[in-house]
View 1 (cartoon, helix red, strand yellow):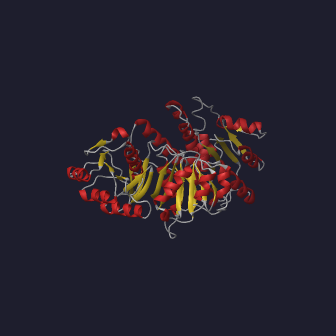
View 2: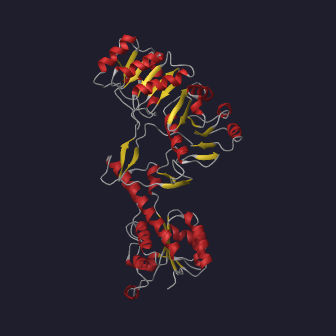
Length: 516
């Protein structure tokens, strides 16, 4: 028995009618009968393609406002009957059920409906029932039936169909795999939406689905394979358009995401430079160009080969400054034509335009793989404001110190723990990241600062409390005049006493920002 099968009868019922007419016309020209429903049938007739309504084929009308159209034995028997089993063939003949050789179905646009802000009732009406049933039936019986679930498949399918005069098993099996992935993703979207509607933060069965955005050259290291999957359409890397530059790597994407999340925290023109997932320079200023200069001053050595994120459209003046050093990626909501022309001189530099910024307060989940499973948590959307600060020392911070404290603590949220950040005038001057000891983080940040403007007269932020006074003493020795930290240590009184002895101001936030 050959695995090459003709298409004598095709069922076409699509929400997205892209490419519908060329697909149906190519099938009809080979003599295939086209079965269809509702809007798809109307579109085919208007294109001059002969079509048989499913209700005429089955002898059963559409009922319940179209909720039941294809959920009948004449359709599913034609899809699920095995042509190599005499019993199946005989039963199909006895009940007058002709075989269906191709199904082209794409589903009601549930995901797009929810993304557009539809209410509960309208969202429920966009949950497709007949479509997934058709797809799964055809995919299960892929030995005999081909199934198309995406207009993007039509061109390659038609090319193979024309070349072979039918469909090969390998093609049908590949289409079946894509079909089951599509229905799984569709159900995952529905399950996630229902969980959100019910306020179920961690459902008993958590389903995650993503659409392949791109395969990558390799993962963190050349011997690892990697790909980028998009899970939603909120502004960010999933919406980014690469204007120029080399292919993005796994590490590029991870670092760019970290930079974009950090820069989105700030309302004024801001620049974040990231290296190996940690900010090495962050600043806010009256203009992007000034913010770039201030961010670069924090650690110009680490900034070489870094990722640059901006929270405003990139302008020509800022582009000229950034182009003066080597950067891997620049990401911004947009860029002027003049800025693009400047960066075009650096053909390997990747320029990503996202069309917007991620909302740092938007509810989301983060995931981390473990052996045999994964951890899930709500995203760190916590934000400390001036009203949250509690002064615990005799000296109260000045208004300038208070502004810098809030800025530094917001940066701290995006630095790997243990994290210490020194800041002055709306810009970081030293960052200590990812050390096992908070004292070491304070000293490294001070050492980084001493290479340039120094930490004298700066403020310091710690992502978690100081368990002993020694960490605070390292910050004081670096020249900080005010400190922000969560508080909550058993030795808070000792730490406060050390701050008072040095005459510095210290505020507690009541919120920590571990980032592991």
